[in-house]
Each structure stands twice: as C-alpha cells, then as structure tokens.
Image (cartoon, rainbow, N blue to C red):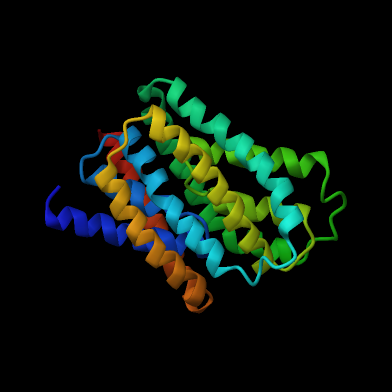
Length: 250
C-alpha cells in the first residue's frame, strides 16, 4: 500500500463514518474504494466491517442526547440485532467466496434503491399512524433480518433499520436515528469479532478506515443535519454504480 492508496482509504473512512451517522450507507463509499484499489471483495468486506466499528461507537456518542430514555428499547432490540449479526457473519464465512462475489452487485443495487427511495421513506414515516406492539414479534423479526443482512454485507443496513424502526416505533425520527446507530453498531461489532478470528483481515486497511470513520462519525453527528441531502445521496449512488460496474467487469 503506497501513500496515495492509504490517503484514499483514510478519506473513504471519514466519508463513511459521517454517512453512517447521518444516513447509514457508508459501506457504499469504503467498499467500492477498496475494490477499485485491487482488494478482493471478501477481504475488502471483512476489513471494512472491522474498520467501521470504532466509527459506529463515535456515532452513538454523537447521538447520545437523542438516546436518552431509550436504554430498555436499545437493549431489547440489541439482542435481536446481535443474533442477526452472528447469522449474517456466519453465512459470509460458510458460503464460498464466489457466492459473495456473485451476490454483492445485487446487494449494492438494493442498497442504492434504498438510498434513492429514502426521501419517500422519510415522508411516509412522518405521516405514519401510531404503531401497535412496539415489543411485538414483527418488529423483532424485522430487526433480526436487518442484522443478518448487516452481518453479511452491511451497505444500506442503516436505511433498512430506520425504516423498520419508523414503522414499528412511535418516536421522533432523530431519536430513531440514534437508536439505528446503536443497533447497526452492534451488528458491525458482532460480525467484526467473528471476522477477527475466522476471516482474512487486512489490518492496515481496517486501521485506516477506523481512524477515518471516528473523525467522520463525530463530524457527521454534529453537522449532519446541515448537509444538502440530495448531494450526499447523488455521491453515494455514483460511487455505488461504479462499484457494480467494476465488479461485473471483473
């Protein structure tokens, strides 16, 4: 890894940390950058996952005010997020690498659709009726499923979560965003622990992304509401499309 590559990975980590704190699709920045630099998709995925864990912690810290009074909710849903993360990470390791390489363009495409649809999702959540059964089976099942997805790949997990939480829980969107950061961080951390012991991790990559994501998450949590969302969304879509093309051509 030369200095320019290291700088690119660090910058991608900063961007991903900020985007994860605000939206939840930062992997669509870091993963394509790693693939473009020549890293194998599976190595890029697990190294990126581990690298983003410190940024997730920083994002939770940045939203600590919105998390006040949500401890019971976070613990209850956190258990199901962790279970899903274990399942997703296990699938990633058990299935052959060729299966991941074949399915990842479709997963990125799904994440891009979620990014594009997010404004409509937000508007729908703002006018949703009061949900019933916050502690019911549907919410727990959906959170577990999002954990499986996040443990396997992760791009767009935050958008999935904010949609699930918005439908299942009656609360302000910013408070749900803080809860989303907790649950997504738990999934990343759970998968990361498994990857440390069972996967091929590029620790140089993981360290650079970790350093960048911490800075990005703190900045994103503080200034995120001032960013122009359409510009951010367009950048994510462009980078994601480039990644899909690159993977398909390979």
